[in-house]
Length: 296
Image (cartoon, rainbow, N blue to C red; front, side, top):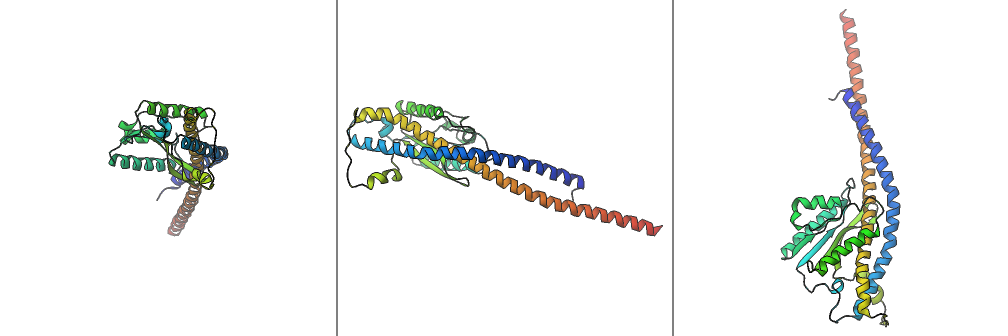
């Protein structure tokens, strides 16, 4: 059995830890409100841009020389996976969910005879994939999470992906990230960026109408696509980065709340052990005093 001194030290240590986790929970909650508002505000714009480009793409369907961001390279051999994680830990299973989904995708693609490349975003993703998949990593991006996500981060990442596509080094590009649902739930998601695909949710508004809208484009559809597709790539990446930031803060707030509760339970349990041990020591001392007095 631990001594009273050891029990006091353990209780004091856990109390200090509880103060830290409680403070981290409040900081994460404050950041979550801003990050959640940004992520929810970006969703309608990103969805509207996908729908608009879908209509432009439909107008140019069947034409030769379609942009690679829209039609791809015409092959399906080299896949670029871009896992989005945080730079810091202490956020429960937030990062491990992205790691698990990415590894599953890597194994599935390799079993189909495809070549896989990785461009991890976030220090946690880079550290994880450096252990077992270092030969697949072609670049990394760190220092994006943990603060206000600048659009320049998405712009630079979009330019890297576009450059790889134009150079013929990749055929398909897919983002792997946690889609924010609420503070306790983040859904691991794969979103294909290149070639561009329409989500079912984005197609519903157009499919609900029986009339086919006629548009007159100025300049022509091809020129518009050349201008808007790189911008759309950046917007989709930016929306995913915002989802990641909101999910990270939500997961950290939940993890720190659980840690604070567990610390409180540990303190209560150790306090009971401390009181019982102290009472036992007092009882033993009294017995020794009484026994000595009777012996005299």
